[in-house]
Amino acid sequence: MKEEKGFIFDLDGVIVDTAKFHFLAWKKAAAEFNFELTHQQNEQLKGVSRVDSLKKILNWANAEVSQEKFDELAANKNADYLTYVDKMTAADILPGIKEILAEIKKEGYPIALGSASKNAPKILQKVGIMDLFDVIVDGNSVTKAKPNPEVFLIAAEKINVAPNNCIVFEDAEAGIEAANTAGMISIGLGNEQNLREADYNFSSFTEITFNFLKTLQPK
Image (cartoon, rainbow, N blue to C red; front, side):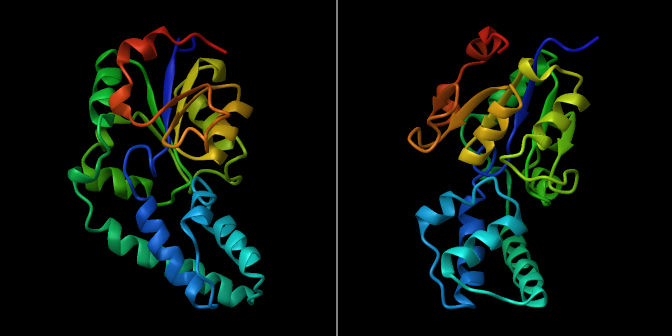
């Protein structure tokens, strides 16, 4: 028998603010072929896999590199990013998220992580909330990146909840599109203009109450 409701959280920009670390690491990678990545372009990389992000940057820069150089750039970017991750603590958890996670857990609803990040387990351990998640579906578990809904559909299957009963929290346009395609309830966190396709929008978890989440009806 399927659970009546399940909650799926993206990681970067939803639980922790690692977007700034990605931006710094991508800027450094792009500088290798004399391209300056902007904040606006970085917004379009949110929720997108490392390989697809690098492809986007190369396209913006109108640059071509060998497969060997491509792999080197991707590996170096991840190494730079991990130097920031290694310094993370519980202080890096975004406001309001820990309280919401604890309430959902207390009420017995299943919780999954649905993230493109291949570093998700390490980050959750660093900030001390790994035990709040029943399931982790990350970049190591999927073959298709957001906006493909694969990551969320796998998460729904693992927590035994029908997709239309799943509530997804996202800060990226690609993630909102993935949740909507999966037939899930999408909640956008951050800039409403960028996330206008979301079913609901909030600037942060401090605006969301657990009572509101309990009242959400299936799609």
